[in-house]
Length: 269
Image (cartoon, rainbow, N blue to C red):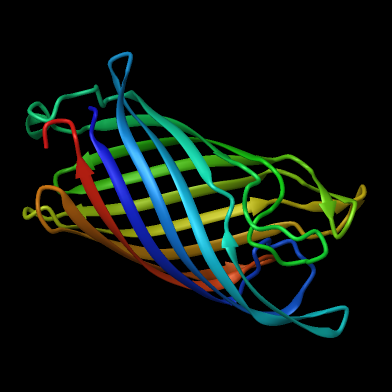
């Protein structure tokens, strides 16, 4: 408890992707290159282990699409809406010092989190595609983790709620129903500290309205991918990840690759 994490990440998304999957574009071929700055701190929450983190992404979006049959292009650089998240393990993971952690044996862990995104990203009310969404979102999540020897299975479920954007294409009101998400991770830990995981995500919902008129754009997407974490020394590690879409009913269909560098300090390190 009391360990700080500083993260710097880079990801590249390309394909049929928009900053907001509900935007009515056709044949959207966009590329989003993102640099992510993040800070996290582990916490003692009434004897349970917890964490607070803040993520500030900056991105460059380029590409083209059809809107009402007319070709459009977009090239913009700026902030994506930053995210703040508070997490706490409710069962199975007590707060520990660095000296106590090596003797800890995980069994079942149940945890919860609340993530909030703030409308501070790049936004132009005259444009359909932006990096920011000009609205707040709130995402409560519940997760379960079970370890069996070197293998850990993780399951989580979340719902994201959105406030309205009252500056959509001028002064229109854009509203969106909640989206529902489920994730599964199968993680294998090697004896040298390296770990790898297979990841799957399913989300649905998120139908939108403009000035109260529905867009009939219920989303349903399934993605899969993998992650590889490589410890460099006591303080530094690298994480490599990649994912692609398996099924898309409505919304973005894209491939993503990225790398994250993590530096740990404090807490006796």
